[in-house]
Length: 323
Image (cartoon, rainbow, N blue to C red; front, side, top):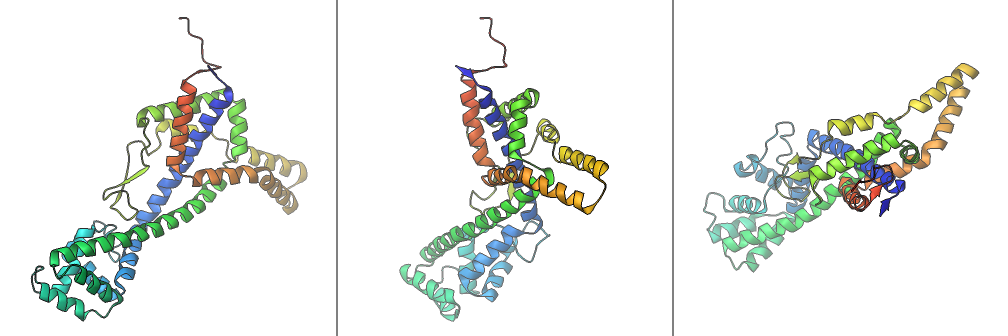
C-alpha cells in the first residue's frame, strides 16, 4: 500500500504540534517550580481540610513534614508532596502531645480539644476506628487521600488555564500559523521529509508506548513529588534546528518593510499591516493554540498511530525496492 503525501503532512504536522506542546509543558513546569505552585496548592488543600491555619502550621512545623522540603526558594509553603501515612502520623502525634501514638485516651483528649471544623470529622473517624489508634491513623490517611484528589483537580485546572495562556504567547511570539505550516509541509518536500524523519527518530527513541512528558517522584497525582524530565521529553538538537527553520514573522516583516518603502513610514501603513496580518493569521493561530492545549501526550499518541500507519506502506518519494 502506497503512502500518500497527505499522510506525511499529517505526521509532520502532528510532530510539530508535539514539539510546541513540549515547549509549553517545559515552560509551565519552570514557572511552577520557580513560584512553588505545587507546594502552595498542597498547603492550601491541607489548610482547607483542617479548617485551621494554626493547626496547619503546626503540622508543617513537625520535623517529619519539614524534612520533606528540599528547596529553599519557597520555604514558607513547605513540601510539594506529603505522603498520606506520614500526614496521618504527624496529625496523630500532634493530637497525643507528649504521649505515645498508641495512647488512645491521649488521642481522644487531643481530638476533643480541637475547635476546628476538622475536629468533628476526626471524632467521627475515631468512633469508626473504635478507639484503636492504628485504625484511626489509617482512616485519617484515607480521608487525606480523598482530599488530595480534589487538590489534584485544582492543580490540573490551574495548569490547563496556564497552558492556554502560554500557548497564546508561544503562538504570537513565534507566529505559529497552522494554515501556513500545512501549506509549507505540502509544498516543501525537504522540510516535510526532515520533519517526518525527526518524528520517526523520536518514536524509535521513546518506544511505542505512551510515556508521560513529566514524571513525579511521588506518583502520578498532581501533588505528588517533584517533577523530573523523562529521557525523551526535552528537545534534541535536530528538533530545535527544525523549529528554528520555521519562517515565523520573517515573511510578514518583509511585507511591512516593502510597504514602508513604497508608501512611507506612517501610522496608517503600520496599522493596515497589523490589521492585515491578524486577518491572515487568526484562523491558523487559533488552530495552533487549540492543538497545543491538547497536550504533548495526546500528540505523541497521534504521532505514534500515524507513523505506524505510514510505515505500513511506502512514501511516494521513497525509492522502490529492487527486490
